[in-house]
Image (tube, rainbow, N blue to C red):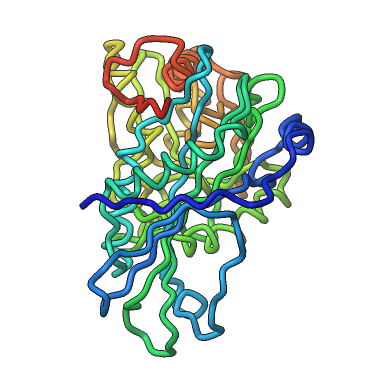
Length: 360
């Protein structure tokens, strides 16, 4: 299905000098561009309709809007990168479109056709290209969908709003990626088999915030969750997947099922295997992690996701004691993979897997 977007530029866009000032230090997710994409869904009308690009405005939602009561809501996160030649790249947006569809399916929401997702993202990048920072900055794109039918009753909504907003972001780490410290959550779990762990829905993140607050109370940057059944196996961080690097050069990462199938995670597995490394997707317990860090078998641990790309993990803290990985510094495997990935994203190196979609 292809849809034509009705493009209605903002009548009073941000003046250039104000925009330039905002782009100096945009932070993450605090500054927004002038436009958004919006497409509506109504079952009675036969599906998706009224695709448009318009000025970013507030939604009007009835107080009985389904999303406000039953949390039918999903989202994605991806970035647009400015190349040295002035063109703009998207990185694997087709994978985001597929995952968005899978999330909608699990949440009993209407599935947005992948080409409509891609078109919406591209149109926002086109109209707001002046907001894309150079250097290590990028334009963070947030496609999302909410249930908008007005009713109180537990059933799937018959109406939805899909939208894409955009936010210029600076480099996630000032002065290069600093190793993060993580807190092992022993009271809270993130997901169980059959649950929504593999879905990018707001509820997963809401449920992780209490554990993240606990991590901060213990002086850590991030929380890591263990499996819900045995409370032993490492699953993922509050918002990132995790990898382990061993002294034989191999890598390991928790298997899919209850964790988010991260696009950065999948890209790292591919790049590491391209380089001839063994990558295992298998359960890894917190006891084993502690033991391997102590013996030196574990050389590096790192987290990965769209926002930070790769964050080395330096220290792990828990009720049963703290431990460091290789002296707490950033390791060569993590940093090498990070450079390779970022160079592909910004178009500085070849793209053997056709991950880049050029908008310009």
